[in-house]
Picture 1 (spheres, one colour):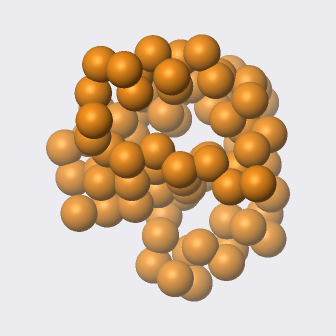
Picture 2 (tube, helix red, strand yellow):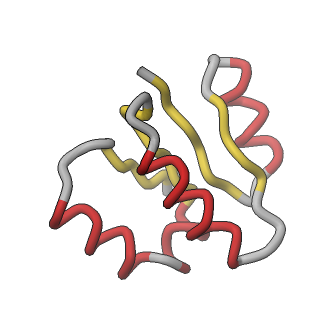
Picture 3 (cartoon, helix red, strand yellow):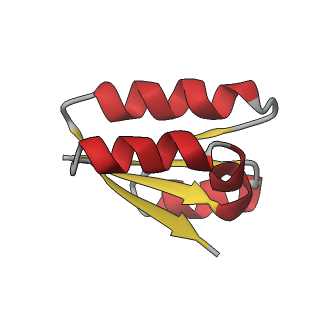
Length: 78
């Protein structure tokens, strides 16, 4: 099972990569939803981690997804 992080913060991404968690560094807001959809469709993904700023931009879509599916687990970092 895999975990992925979606963030705009390079240091946060690097810290998670040191722990073996892949992810993407967002520089355009439209990439957030694109990457979320990609990760959530992957059967190998068990956990998607959002930085708070990225989560807030697609909050409605993420919450709609959570109501329909229980996997992968979605975590938001403050």
